Image 1: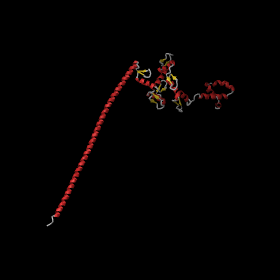
Image 2: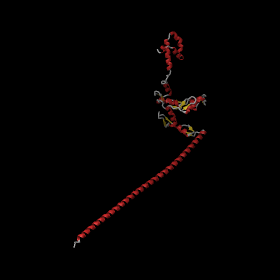
Image 3: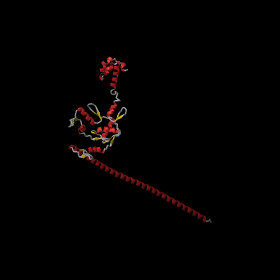
Image 4: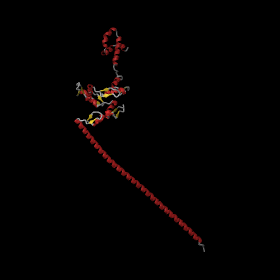
Length: 323
């Protein structure tokens, strides 16, 4: 009869192995469940993140929408204000035109006794007192109170003269100058001085003339005590102090303070220099007179006048002319 003890031991070992296997299986299942839960948690986390991003985007869109609505409201308000401003400007313009028609001048200068029919005229005038000249020439640095004045000044540098006289063809940089010039052809002189009955083509010329009678000299030099009746005379005078030279020769680049000095200088560059022909003629006549006898001198001496130079030269022998 066999011993039952080894069989019992074998059975016990098998049971322990099965138990171990079951534990391993259970642990494996637990791990699988944990892995699945982890996966689910990750998916939930990702969904939560996506939801948060969607929410942020939604909030951003809402803010953009609100900003857009605010901008639309601001735009409407701006358009409303612009319309109000335009209406206000139109009313001011109508009001000013009404003052002009009635001859009223309600806009008074706070620095002097002058009055104006338009507020823009007053603003322009007050710059004389404040010295404000916001527009500057990039060529010479000269400053102006208005952009239109700067534009006109730039034609000095560009030599542009777009306004031509239909009668004589003379060109001008300013339309106003052309209109004044055209009165020379028409003979219209509608402004008369009551002191001497002299007539003028423009009111400005009459006003300048009347200062001769009144002795008025409103323009004072800022460097010395000299006074002038015209602003142009003051400007010319002040170049003596500033040594400003606005007029430049386009042939050699030499500059001058006065236009008359430039014109005199330009004769040097002219093709036929002033008096060159007459001086040459006088020299040739002198040589011709030396070449003839003493008896002939008295008979031709009267011909030495400028009007007879060419006649004498034509009769002179080649040896006398080029001696």
